[in-house]
Image (tube, rainbow, N blue to C red):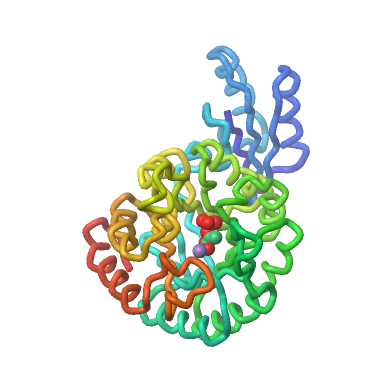
Length: 342
Ligand code: PEP
Ligand code: MN
């Protein structure tokens, strides 16, 4: 059960509701939200308890509505908000009618490399520029990113081209630094259950782009989102980027497009698909980006490099600028058939 308080409900009113719940021997999860507080009851209630509590709480001062959910996640659920969340970053809306493109290299490698990537992203009509400055690499001997220098380059180039920027933050203590430079904080797949990081990202006030862990279930994914939301940050963007494959000989991961309609049903948060990490192979990005659009995703994140052969990370999945532009053209042609604008 979720109790959504009215905007501006007082602390005393919230406490009074929580006490009614606690007096029945149940746990009350008080979750401050954007302008209003929600109170979740994580226990599964029987019919009598439910009717009884609902009647009692609905009548209390400061209560907006009482809704039922049997899911472990509350603020991330569709029951919490029937309306889909639209995340607004500068002039870009994620989760609205427009299908959003996030493009750019896996890593920020130099000012020159990032600037030529941004030029292509801009030319394509895409609105969000990606690029990693802190890279979560499987091996400690692989390129780890340019760190703060990479952030500086990203900000400079983002400003120059008028693009919204997104980059990964790998630990809680790095959130303030990354938030200083980037418009959107990316939480990588490997960090999806780094709970202290989720909490810090939640406190940052920046939109959080949460990638699904390589073996995360939907409940685990949405509970990770819940960590961010429960810090009072309503702007979480979910990203499907492929789950662990049992046959890695042909694709890097299994892009789970079936999760898109499921997430849309069970959550109100925007969903982005990353066909680059999802397949690991540049020539598979086009079909899977189109499939992502048809599946109901709100956008795609696509890796592109001015010269993929020389990329310091993820070169095999990076599109050339020509391929990138042509994939975006395909998506623009497809968009009206699924009622999206681009
Ligand atoms: C990335 O976006 O470059 C990245 C490392 O993604 P993931 O966390 O999905 O592997
Ligand atoms: Mn990458």
